Amino acid sequence: MTEYVLRFIAGGVIVSAFAILGDMLRPKSFAGLLGAAPSVALATLGIAVVQHGSRYAAAESWTMIYGAVALACYSVVVCHLLMGFRFAALPATVLAFAVWLVAAFALLAGLGGAA
Amino acid sequence: MLVKLSSSSLKQTHWYEYGVRFVLGGLATVLAGLVGAHFGESVGGLFLALPAVFCASATLIESHERRAKEKAGLNGRRRGQQAAALDAAGAGLGSIGLAAFAAVFSITVPASTVVAFVAAIVTWAAVSVSIWWLRRKLRIVFRRSSS
Image (cartoon, rainbow over all chains, first blue to last red; front, side, top):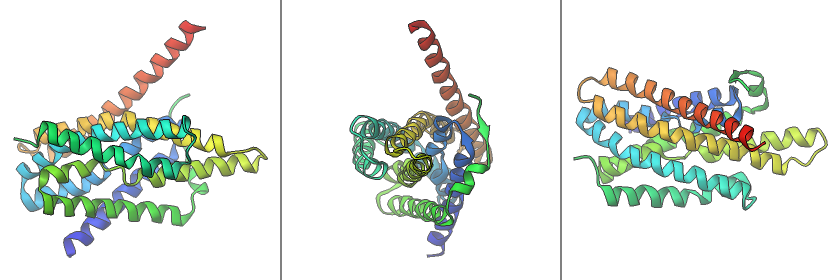
């Protein structure tokens, strides 16, 4: 339980820090880079190294590459839903989540995890 | 336009909007831990690039932009969508940096944890900023050649 409380606080603090920095940056396309900041990864990988060792963290970060590729697909779909189909931000970002899931798991199934 | 850092935009943000992002960030990190514990590190790793906070950020950007335009007596709906789309485009470019972060961390962590974190963060920042800058330069060149 303590571990998950620690995860929650660490994740919340790091995500908030990147979000505040993103709010302060201009232009918006540059600030958007922080939408793909490794905030969840920093908190999780730090705990993974302490708990399971560096080999576990290396394997976890290897499949994170697939998650990042899926995030690129997700961002493109969100852009199209907003600009092409004139969706509002909330439904666009929630609907596109299905694209992230499909892309991430398809890459994992096709390419496999770390050796 | 140069990259600027301004604290004035923070005044537009309500305290509960920070709270929403804190909670979503915390929940995404807990989810990544739970998935890793139940389904193994390969599946857990996917969730380190989960766009959990993106829906909150894009919605906030859209509502801030809409409010600003409506204050000026204009219809801000379309401007809000455009601002959120710009943010998504930035995240798309940043995801290349995120992939580079993951690759560098995976390669360097067996040697040294501290070096792995520092090298991965520096790589993420360098790759993300370089790709943003390159895209900006290419757009300027294409605009000049088409006019």
